[in-house]
Structure formats: structure tokens, C-alpha cells
Amino acid sequence: MYVPRASQGLHIPRIRLPLLPLVAVVAAVAAWGALTIRPIGHEPALPQPIATDIHSIAYFEHAPGADVLTVRRAAGASVAEPVAMFPRYLEFGARGSASPTGGTVAVLSVGERPTSPATLTLVHMESGEPRVVPGDYGYLSPLAWAADGSRLGVLGFSAGGEAPVLIEVDVASATIVSASRFDSALEVAPVGFTPGANGMLAVVVDAGGSSLWSVRGGDAKHVADLSAGLTRDWSLSADGARLAFVERLGVGGRRYAGRVLTHATGTVQRVPGDGDQFGAVWQPGTQVAEFGGPGGSLRLAGGGTGYIVPRAWSPDGTTLVAAVFPSDVPGAEAELQVIHTDEWRMPLGSNSATFIGWVRDRE
Image (cartoon, rainbow, N blue to C red; front, side):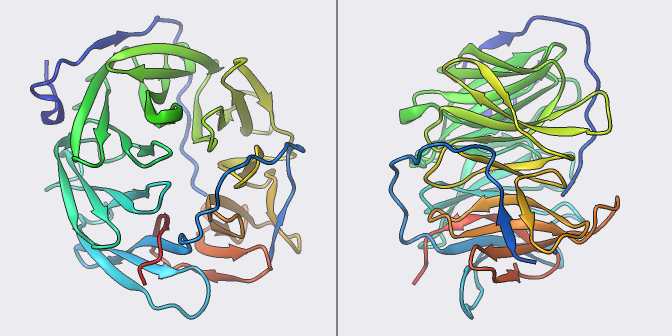
């Protein structure tokens, strides 16, 4: 059996999942006014520090044959600063995610062709130094961080029909800590880590639906069931106690609905909404999960048929990066915008810019 180079020399435990009747396959759905927030509940604030030096946004600007990792301040007439460059193949560009501490960006870049393994690079944002993590990785893999930025979850490269391999990376040394193969899984998505980075949390989609698992040292433990069907847009709360996600509904006019899982009890809360909900983010300093889409809690003032799909709040909770759709007509093209709660907003880079995350200021 093929083993990704990322895992050669490692013992890869097999995690066998129970086989149940096959569920339907979900269709991927992508995601202008001031931002208004309609909370889904009244939860107490969480005592967490505000990162005072994280006011900048990292994103990719697309150039011929390359994607440029760029940084700019979210507010004011800031100058965009290029940090690193990655190869691009046709419409297949680099994908990235910023650590919660804002000091490192993880980048998945394509190889000679889109179906080939991707390269995983860790970029130190202060120095711009790139470090390649040895191995082969899935180009479309989600990237999930530990709260302290010390660990990263990613999927290894799997050829057609092979079981997904979940990989844990030590960021300081840019080396693989562990790798686990999920037999019978249709999809595996790392979503974060348990407190203290003592284990990785991953959503597994198989014939029985969607469920949350905890993986440590190759040993996997079932945490909770999310849905009997398919799920997407997973977002772990800052304290790791809750998981917000979107469930694909099989009947009725509403197709996508927000949900919140509480790990300790295994209960899944239905999020009120009068339409489809996309994207899930956590308002900093609270236990409130917010969703975009026509029926989401995050909406643009002034009415109309437009809606937003949130990408990420700034750590101080004042600014949101979101994909803004001028219309709910299928095929409407979105624009990435920086939206401030004081009712100003601006586009993020060019129309083709790709958001990465919030990072520390480079001055």
C-alpha cells in the first residue's frame, strides 16, 4: 500500500471506522453596507488576552505563474509588503493559514500538476524565512493549529481510493510528530487541538455521517457525532470546548444550517436562521458562534439580497475579513473585504486576492 513520503519511516496506525449505509455527497458552495451582528445567544465573555500586536492581514496576491504572500495593516493607508513567493499552476494557487499567535503562516503549494503532492512550507512572518516540512501533502487539505501555534494538523497526500492520512507537525522543528490512517473514511479534516496541544481534533466523514475524533500518538477516540449526513465549514472555539459547523440538510427549502457542538455533553445546538448559513467564526472574547449566508447572524446593513461569508475576526474583535456577495443569485462573484464594526470597509488587495489570516505587525 502506498504511504506518503511524509510518513515514510513512521508507524502509521490504522483507524478502522464502523461501516453504515452510505450517505449523500454534499455539493460545495462558495461564498456588499456596514456590518451588523445578530448573536445567536447571550453567552458570558471568556477571559482571554487580546493580542495587541496582531493588526495585519496576510493574503496571496496572484501573479503570472506565482502567488505572492503579502502583508498589510488592516486599517489606514497601509502599504502592502511582499514576504514570500510560491508557484502557481493555472488556477491552482497556494493555500495558507496563519497561526493563532500570528507569527507563522503555513502554506500548501502545488507541484508540477494539480494532482501531484503539495509542498508544506512554514513561513516565519517577522523574518520571512521559509522552512519546508519534508513529505507529501494533500493540496486541498484543511490546516488546523494548536492555540499556542506549536502544532499543525494537515492531511498527507493520498492517491485515488487510498485512505486519508492525518499528520501532526511540530512547528518549531518543522518535523512530523505522528501520522494516522483512517480506513473507510470518505473525508478527514483536522479542525484543531485539545487544550495544551495534547491531541488533535478531526472531523471524520464516513458512511455513517460526520463525527468528531481526538487523535493522539496514533490512537483515535470518538468524541461526538455531528450529523447523520455531511458537514462543512468547521470552526473550533478558542478554548477548544465547542465546534461550530454547517450541516447539509436533505429536505426542505433550507439546504445549509449552522450547528454548535459542545464537546463535554456531546449535544448539538441548532442555530436559528431564516435561510442558508455558510461559514462559521467565533466572536473573540465570547462563546458566541456566528455564521454568514442569507440566514446567518452576520449581515450587511441596508437590506438587499447580498450576504457575506466570514473568514476570520481580528483578535481584538473589531474587524472582520469576509467574502461579500452582492447578490444571492447563483454564480454571483464575491469580493474579499475588510469590514470594521465602526462601519467602514475596504477591499482586500485585488479581486483575485486569497485571504490567509491575521498576523503580527511587521514594523
